[in-house]
Image (cartoon, rainbow, N blue to C red; front, side, top):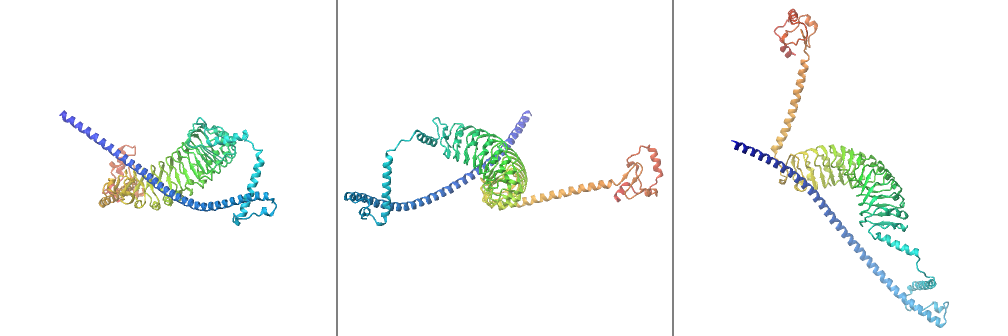
Length: 607
């Protein structure tokens, strides 16, 4: 007997182990599906990159061919022109040689410069049309010979100052010290216009910037992709007012952006991305009214100033992957030239400002994903008619997907995953024929999969982990299991065999419809029962009971005085009078009901 009990325990344990393995298998399967989706996305990106590479390669080949044709044509023209110039020079040289010889002959014969013989040599070696040109060349050579003779005595070597200038020019061109650091004498040439130090992996600080304040004609500083450390010096504000570009990205710069940067009034491009800058972004940056590109991404900034709305010339604004908290400034709606806006992967909260969605100039990208933004997706999103890439994923957005999204006809990439959107996928999205990537996963969307999704030329479609039901389509992207994911929707069926869903049948569909009707009928019946119960309670309340009489809703005191009182069972009444029961019995004997054959239940039924 004990052995049987032990065997039963072992069987139970094995069953539990099997169940756990089955659960783990389900989780692994879901993880594999998610991984497949990610792989499909990466594969799609790789495919697009390859296509873009091929397109760029073809474009480059076409440009090369056009350039080669232009070079060939220019060479042909140049060759003809060079050939003509060569002939011209040869003939002219012959003439000058003859003329020089003629000059010597005339001098020996006593014919001076003023004689007709000297000024009229025979044109035996030159065409008539080339004689004026040849005479001009001859006179020019004579003048150069005379100047050379005059300057020969006064010729001198360059002084120490001139030698130093030449050395400095070479140093600036090289830009590197003997120890692999940036040279500190870059400011010794005031006329220098550009400093290019990028991609040298300099391990140095930013002290080289201060001497550059002497370069009054400086236009651009490029020190990106190095190992420069330290903080931005205040002297950066004293750089040339002609400065239009500063690129210090991909270094190890820390600290903050100094407020005096507002003095660089002509700055049109500023990038300090991929550094360790911290704190609020200085509001003085809003004084740079000519700024067109601002890259502050991948730092540790904490707050956005509302003065960013003053940058009305801004075209590109990158602020992703910082520690920025608070609301998105509504003043950004004033940047009416923006093409790209990236605020993703920060700690922004609050609603999405409708002012941002009204920026119809946004055409390249609008990335707001991976924040703590809440509320609904503004209806003004329909103004983004030229936008190609929209990411509002990983937020706390809720409500339904707005129908106005169907006006974003240029949309190619749309990510809405990891939110709390509800209801059906709107039919208005059928106008987005250019979509290549659509991710609506991890929401609470319900209803059927829209048929138009099978007509789109999608590279990736992710509908996983929603509440969709009904039949999965079998056309278009739904034929490629590497491009779609519908896992986590337990009521889906059909589709291609590789999806491993339950088969679709009309009887099942009818059963689902019938089940839905039964649910509706059940709801109606429950509602009627509740109404009937409430009505019954209301009727019961119309009977007013006391210790010795019962008043019905159609009786009065006068009726009782006339003897129109129904028979009453005292045992059914609640004693509300503290009087002794014997007194009540005596009083009840004085009251003689005229209708003794009618009891309380009959009276209530009549009511």
